[in-house]
Image (tube, rainbow, N blue to C red; front, side, top):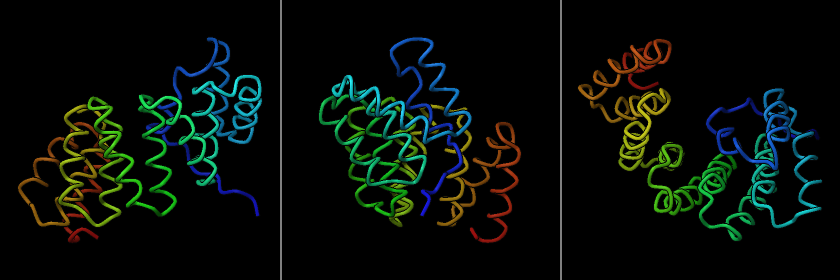
Length: 204
């Protein structure tokens, strides 16, 4: 059975930006990611790891390729090895948490990302992924502050506002939904339209 190939996610891809040994290599990585050629990206990372097994960047890139193919156990192993060697690599923490969530382990993902949020207090991606994990764990009381912090750290990232608005819809906080809608109408009209539709439909 062929591995699943998932749509490219710009927020996930941001974790591999700037990784690589040279400008040319970084450009090649970006090109493969843009083409969503995850198999080629994985082969490149694995070849580089054979010559330098301790290079954390290539470990993250390999894990990202596995994650993008939906091969979560392999991705999780790759990210865990990087974190063991380099506990300050917030990109690896974020990718590990999101990989765990996508693998259907939101509880494990929340634990991973809670730890990441202590390390990377300024990473909006950490708080966004944490909000997603809380949401999947049916813990909207915790998802809302996480999304709010993601939006505070990066006000231009529309998806944080959207997910925050959806969470408010689900708990019936109409005033907060209206405030988020005002923000989204300026930032991402299509998401504002979708949020309004969900608000009118009771969150469905």
